[in-house]
Each structure stands twice: as structure tokens, then as C-alpha cells.
Image 1: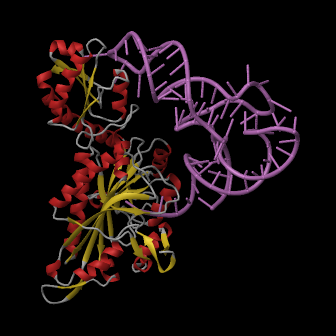
Image 2: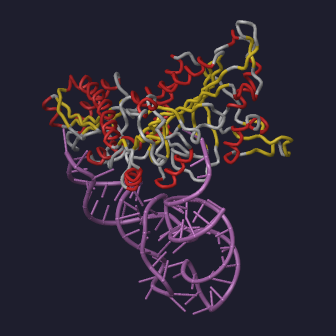
Image 3: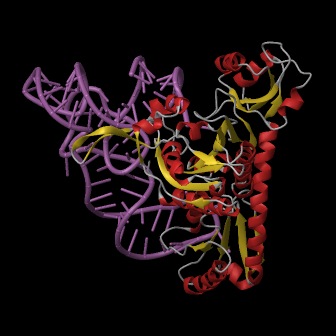
Length: 443
RNA sequence: CGGGCUGUAGCGCAGUGGUUUAGCGUACCGGUCUGGGGGACCGGGGGUCGGCGGUUCAAAUCCGCCCAGCCCGACCA
């Protein structure tokens, strides 16, 4: 996997915002090894079963065959819990709230740029708690952190909810996720938060002495988001002109392009550069005085890169002491007094941020339907599809049947789904519905 | 891992037995003009035709094997 500078800059912006949110919720960062003894992975039965086909294994080191192969981490639960065993003795050591920023590797048969790469960058939080309730609370807290990040920074609306048994993380008791709708109406899982119960604590024998003096296994969570978010951002907002970067994450928020002729070049550049210097004080701003390309060419180029606001300054603006502002999301242009430009840019950036979110949310809502008739569901997914809210009996058989007939899977069981299902008849089986499930074709 | 397709200049492609030195678009370099939505003209540089082997007087072109990439499927967070 290679991430070039413009893409990596987006990831850096994301990292910073997410990391701040982790710190605000009491987490600290640490680092654990890339190579994990194979036996560690095998300690937790479902975990090994889930990951075995995707592991890259190191068999040689220092020119010699290793006695025990090392796997390249597909996730770090096992190596981290082997350490937690040493760090945790008492309830006073809990909760342990650690996050790691790292690369991981899963040997995918079929990769897709940013969405499914063999190597990817992510963060993985691993927490240990004295009680199940506290761990469950942590699981939902971090799910909400992801929801807020997606909505407030990426301007990407997401559904939250519980994964089915079939879809959950290998080794988890419960898996929750945030799910977004891409512009082709397919779902993208954009982040997960797992309640691990005592599974890993038992596999790695991590016990602690409770306040009452008893010995108990600790309760755990893990949660992560990855460079897949870069793909999610691209696929949520881009248009035919290229990337549309939400202002809060855009590596460059405002680009100033001077428009000059040979005879007035010096004056225009001076006017434009003075403005750029003022914009730099408040925004992530760039300036493009390059003489090699025409203004029109530069407009297109910076649009392709997704910069939210473009400032055009030419002789006409100079005469009138104005500048032209163009917004990336709608293409709309406006003229403002040069002195008021920084404030006008600030207002525009705010407006673009909220417009992008609203537009994405409308699109998702317009492409979400409640469907309780199976023929209608099949027709829905044979056509354009989208999200379908469907009364489901909770059985893996029904879930599998829908997948076979429509290629759609259950993305999530939303928070209030059981209440909403009461009194309804489940699809296919005709039994009383236990859940309202969100079905969609997914990446 | 199965089925299909494609490898020719940085990128996109044409050329499919012999046709000056393998072309076209774009990008790149130099120059002049131009400059408010991807400019014009002039001049220029850049190629193991994916690799290896074979057929032939002659191979980018035909044959075999290999490698890589893409699409579909199976698998999968």
C-alpha cells in the first residue's frame, strides 16, 4: 500500500482529530510489536478461526528458520493481552485505557484501494475494566466518538448499531459499528467497537483482585478505525470534478489564485500575495502564482484536489478592492471586499461543512426504505437499492437467504430496533419479528 | 483459488507477419504570444513493444511457457 502526500495529509488530519477525542475520553497511546508469536493468536479459539486465512507469517529470522513462526499482526488483541496479564493485578490498576496507532496486515484475496488493502494504517483501542457494565459503557462511548468524528469532521452521516453473530468480530461478544452510505448507495463499515467480555482475559489468564478481595477475570473492549476512512471520505463527497474535502479535514482549506497578464503581473501578484498572507493567519491556505498554467487550468486542478474555497484575484478585483470567492461544493461564486475576505472565507467554510453533511444525509434518507415484503426487497436490491429497514426474525438462516437472493447483508441492528419490530411479521419466515435490521449491499 | 480480459513513451491508446528511424493524443523541455473556467503556434527530448524461449529470409505482430495488472466469482472485516 502506498499513500501519496495528498492522501496522507487527509489521514494526518483525521488522526489528529480522533486522537484528541481519545485523549478527552481518558485514553493514552502506547506501542506494541508488529510480530506476534503464532501461538498467541491460537489462544482464543474464535479469534484464530477468524483470522487464520488472512495471516502473513514470518518463518525465518537472522538467516535461520525460527523455532516458532511469527505472524504479522492482523490486530493486536493477543500481544496486548499477553502484556496486560503482567500489568494488571488489582482493581486499582483498572480501568486500563490504551490506544495504539499502527499498521496491520491481512492477506486479502481481493483488494480495493483504501477500502480493503493488505496493509493498512489504523488505531486500535484496547481497554480493560473491572465490570461488564463498565466495559459495555466504554464500547458504546467509543462508538459514539466514532459517530461524532464521522458526522462532525467528515460530514458523513452514519448509522450506529449492533452487528449480527455472522458479521461480528472474531473473538468479540458484541460488535458495534458505524455504517455510512456511499454515493452508489452501497454501505461502508467505517468503524467498529467491540465488547470482548472476558474472552481474551480468560485466554491470557488476566485476573485482578476486586475491591471485595475476590479474584476475577477483567472485562475488555477494543475499537478501531483505519485508512478506510480516507476512502469513505472520498466516496461520500466527491463529484465529477474530483475530490470534495470537508473544510474541517481539508489539508488545504483555501487556495488563492492570482489572475494576471504580462503587463500587470507585478501589481496583481503583490495584491494577491498580501491577501494570501492574511488568509494564512486563520486558515490552512495555499497560494498558486505559477506562470506555467492558465487560471482556468488552476481552477480545475485545485477543484480536483478538493480545496473547499478558492479565492480569485485579478486586475478587476484590484480596481474595486474586492476578491472573488468560489465554493467547491456548489461552484457558486461571490464577490466580497478584500478587507472582509478572511471573515467571508470563515463563514463559507462553516457553511460548506454543514451543507456537505446535510446533502449526504438527505441522500441517505432518500435511499432508505422500510420494506416488509420479500418480493419487494428483492426488487429493491435488483434495482438501485440502498438501505432497507426490514423486520427480521433473528435467524442466521433468514440472513443467509437474503444474502443469497439479493447480495445484501445485515449492516447493523439500530439502537431502538427491537422496540420498533414489536408486532411486525418477519420477512421470509413469517414469524414474529425480533429486530428491525438494516440490509444493504456492502463494500 | 476459478473464469474472462489486458500488457507498445510518464499516462491513455493505435499498429496484429515486410511499408524510410514504431505512431497518435496528452504530459514533459525551450521559445514567442496569451492569461477572469483545463490556451495558440514553432522547435525539441523520451521506447529492452511485460519477460524468456521458439517458428520464419523477416516478429510489437504467429506459437509455447512465465510474470504483472484489471474485471467477475468464491473467500473475507
